Image 1 (tube, helix red, strand yellow):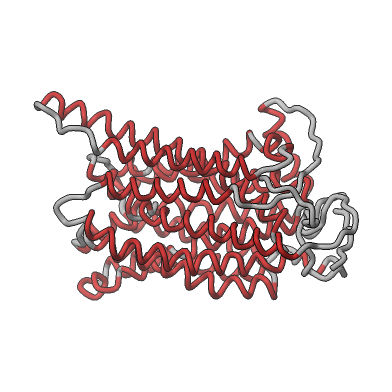
Image 2: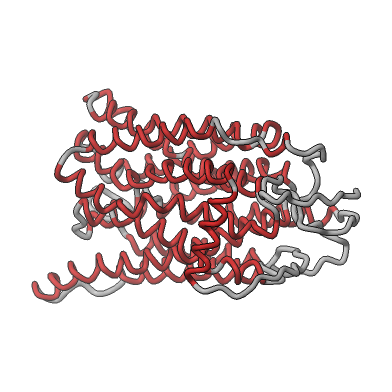
Length: 464
């Protein structure tokens, strides 16, 4: 099928399947189908491992077992978003200039695996021999936990920007909703099956065998790294001048200054990013206010992933047919409700205790919302600018989470209710901003079912 060239207008408001300039070639459907399947496989295996480190359930609960207070628990979202934003931003030029990117994707996935396998090894150490050793352990284990957690998310941030760049390059614009649907539905199914059969063996009210929980997550990330090498990727040939660190941030600021539609999206993302600050505190709210136990974590993890699968089933087809803007508006409205539902159930006594899992079902829409932000960003930027736009978006999503330790302290000194209501209002503002976003698919007469930024020719090289 021949494909046409479309060039991004000067203000970068082009649809995301606009390549900078490539000639018309015939698309070889075989590598297109293969890449769709491999990218789905990578995400499915990643999701299966990810459920064993769920940010709203497993990680804060494990840190709590190490004696983590609210302010220490509040560092988790901060380290998460710093890793997801700063390293990708600093590496945008290097990622852009790589002719093939799948090896970078594999290396970043290996970094994720290494961090979690090292975390698992901490629980294989022999028990302390005396009280002094026990005291030292209580000091260094939370510190080592946070350091490895930071390294994991630095690798995750790089992995995500490379994956999203490859998605913009290898997956058709009208197949990205289907990719979201397939990866989340199948991935949630495999993840829930793994949790159902394995987590009860490793998690009880009395103890958590963290070495097995984290070890399994690390093994899944290792498998995903191997799957990256199966992608078929044509070579890129981009150029980009050398940059100092301050130039990188200046370039992101320039994108925000010159692209009004992306600026509105980034502001919505900035406000939406406040929802991450509450992730460690949902399980604490349920356990402290309703007397729920560690074993409830298993059910919450399952429900959260079921929620992700369900919202993907709804969001994916709508995004492919009606555009990502429509999906984003619906999802941001749902995000506003999560803190309010949590507060309501926390004050509902026995009824709230039975139905508190609804909070985690709603939290399941968060990764779908993040992916929709990314997919919309891919649509409004040219292929040459994908890494810059995605990294800038990630930085905006991360910015409010820098205050997460402060939010943890506020939970300790004020109440869950005050903090949760404040975040709900900020997310409501993000929802209002989404109504002013442009629909990029209405800005061009070209049919939206063409291949994305690069089209695979029959002799496409097998590399990333």
